[in-house]
Every structure is written in C-alpha cells, then in structure tokens.
Image (cartoon, rainbow, N blue to C red; front, top):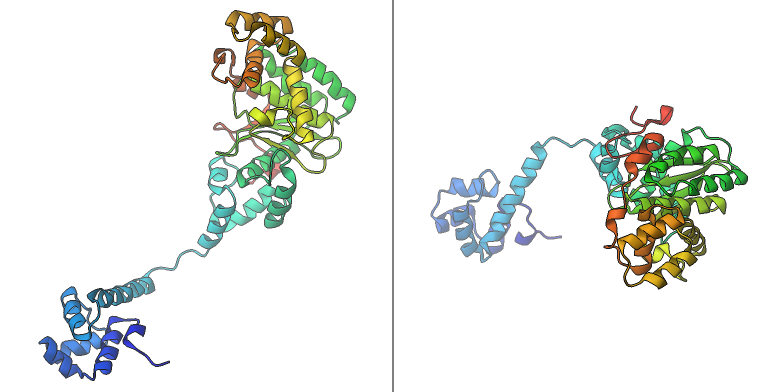
Length: 382
C-alpha cells in the first residue's frame, strides 16, 4: 500500500510524505518557513520535536490542521515514554481478572485470603474448594433457590465461608427426632432476648452446625441451609438485620428447610427475606412458602395474630402489644416484627426490636465484625 501523509505515525514522517506529495525538497521547505535547512532535516528524521509555532506554519504549507502535527508529535513522545517505562508485574493481569469475577478486596479485608498477587488464584481456588471457574459456574447455577438466577459473587463467597467454618465444627450426627425436640426447646426461648445464647448449643446437640458470618457489602443475604453430608445439615445466618424478630424468623425459616431436607442436592440461599419474599403468595417458590409459613407460625401463631389485629386495628398501642406478647409467651419485639410484616409499617414499634448479635455471638461460631474465625488446616491465611 502506498504511503500517504495521513498514514504517517510520526510528525517527521508526515512532513517527509507531505513534502513528497507537494514536490518540495527540504531546502524548499526551509526557504518557505524561513528556517535553516538543518532544522528541516532534523524535523524529517524526528530528531527535533515539532513545536506549536512550527505546527501552525506547517499547517499552512500542507493545508492540514495544526492539531494533527501536534498529535503525531505527542504520540511519538508517549511511545518513547512507554519504551523507557518499567514493565509491570505479570500478575497484574491475573489479579484484575480475579477482582472482576470475585469480591477479592472484601475477602482480603475480612482476612479470608492474603493480598499476595502471585498466590492469589491459588488462594481463591482453595477458598472456593474446587477448580475456580467450574465451581463458580455450577455452584452458582444450583444454589440460589430463593430468587431468580444464580447468586452474586459476594453471596457465593459468603456461602463458601459458611461451608468452611461448618466443615471445621464438631456436631452430633443429625436425626429428625432430635430436630423435633430441638424445635420444642427453641420455642421456650422466645420470651427473653437473653435466652438466644442457648441457640447454638441446642442446635449442635441435634446435629445442626450453626454458623454466623457477616454478609459482604451488597449481598443482602439473610441465611442459608445446606448439607455437608446426609447427617450433617448446616444453618448459616448473616444477622443482616440485628433484631430479635428477624433472628427468630430467619432461623426458623432455615430450620424448616432442614426439617424438609431442602438443600441436600444444592444449598438453599435466602437473600432479601422480607416483604413479599417472606410471605406465602404465588410468586414465592414452594420450598420458600413452606419455610416462611413455618417461621411465621413459630414466631406468633398466625390465627391468633390475625384475631389480635382484627380486634385492635387500627389502634395498636404499646400496652396492647406487650400484653399480647405475654399471652403468646414471646418477646414483644417478635410480635412487633410480625405486625410490621402484616401491616407493611416498618416504622412502627421499633423500640421493641432489641439487638441480639452480641447475645448469640459468644456461644456461636462467628466470622465478621472485625473478627476472623480460625479454620484449622483449612485456613487460607496461614
């Protein structure tokens, strides 16, 4: 292909090709510009940069924008800078690929992996427990039973962290009869927030591994249920909402998944378990409808709650709520939460919804809120 001024890569090449196109010699151009011939020679061979003043003059000679000559000059300078620049660490590309696919920064921040670029892919592969890309594809496709599509990378990382911690725990073999007795014992803990401290022990005694992991930003996870094997169910919770009503609703929701042996073939991951997703409408998948109904009934018998609302609405006073809670043998915050779900008024009765994370944490396996749970020889930070 014949070279033309507009195919030039440098300002010097452009000047040489433009001179040829116009039939000018270097001495001719020097005469036109009123400069020494040596200067033109240096411009053509790119030994002298084209200044802004010269670019304006050359633009008149060759009938082109002055910006064209300056841009060619700048491009040449940039190429020279790049030649002199030190080559980056090859791990930058691998690190960028991992960060675009997984919440690497948050995982480093939480102490789940180390900020060590050469070993980053190996660490993440170890963290997720199988070959990296295959795991992300198959696990993501199967895990997200509570909504459409698969889990986000943040949700997947959370789920894998729960799995790591649960696999490192000791618990009795699970059996269905023990779960029935455990549910009866848990029901007796509803009256006082302080009684929540007994939950991890009650679950462990019936063979359920209970793990609390702080959610990653934006994950909106409430809980999960899955099985390490057919006698080792796991219940994970994020305590995304640190409220007594939410704690008991999410916990009983996940325990119903265990009771019905949901999550055996693929984890049940429950995100945004609120509003319509916490109900029993047609838009909710069957596994979740069953779990939601069991959770609501456990917190407050729904027929009695409906009767209470019918009698007292729209004037639901604090005294009425406290009295009804005592009648039901549950904490007033649990009643307040159920009333919020039924009325859609989440601004009401908030003072009853006490925080529980600090109560359950000392007796549970917990990761997050500034603490990193240790996982024996599975600890990828070692």
